[in-house]
Amino acid sequence: MEKCEIYPVQNEDLDEIYTLCNVCLGKNYISKNELINFPTQPFVALKAVYQNQLAGIAVGQKITWKDFKKILHEHLVETEINLNINDNKIVGWRKHLCVYPHMRNKGIGKMLSMRLHQSFIQENITPVFSFIWDYPGNIMANMLSGMGYKTLGKIAYFWKHESLQKNYECPICGCPCICNAKLMMYEKK
Ligand SMILES: CC(C)(COP(=O)(O)OP(=O)(O)OC[C@H]1O[C@@H](n2cnc3c(N)ncnc32)[C@H](O)[C@@H]1OP(=O)(O)O)[C@@H](O)C(=O)NCCC(=O)NCCS
Picture 1 (cartoon, rainbow, N blue to C red):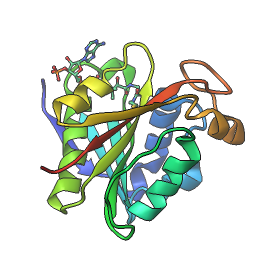
Picture 2: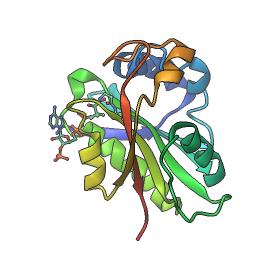
Picture 3: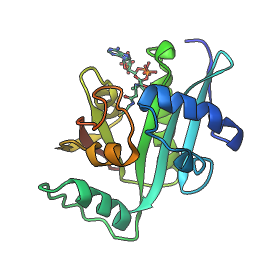
Picture 4: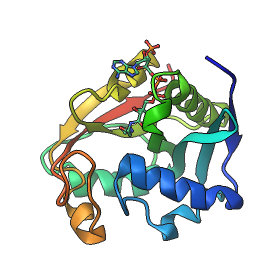
């Protein structure tokens, strides 16, 4: 692969990132209001630059276990997740990863993914969680299991409510989004 550089996302990148997210994740999936927070705490937002162009982003968030549990409870209606974590502990949440279609399969997604993972680990932030978009051909679950992530469960129609609320078009199934998610977790041994 030609050289791909990874940088922290800055304010001046946000217009370009908005276009990237609309193309890769669905129009209006990421609102401008969410986007303006990317360069600030508690977000960890990285961009990949390939041949002098924005190629992709990886975005995570640091969040207390208590707040992340609320998100789990909103979605995991029937699944009990019994993890022995202190409510005030900061955990990692991998939120978005995407690469422009014409720049895929060159190792950029994996590089972004690993850097995001490392930024949590370097700050001793574990476990790290991810809701994987479960569509045919998505390579994310394989990529994360190669990095030591384990699948905790599957969540039906994970984005349905949000897609109706934000009125965004899922690139796979439109609106409402009826895609399922897989919850994956990395825990330091
Ligand atoms: C998922 C995504 C970020 C991957 O980005 P990418 O730059 O193409 O990924 P990479 O080139 O780093 O590939 C990672 C691995 O997947 C493999 N891979 C890539 N494209 C593949 C394909 N079409 N079929 C099979 N394997 C593929 C690569 O060979 C590599 O495997 P390796 O780890 O064994 O070397 C990109 O496809 C994307 O933006 N998709 C739309 C948004 C999305 O689904 N985001 C994830 C939400 S959970």
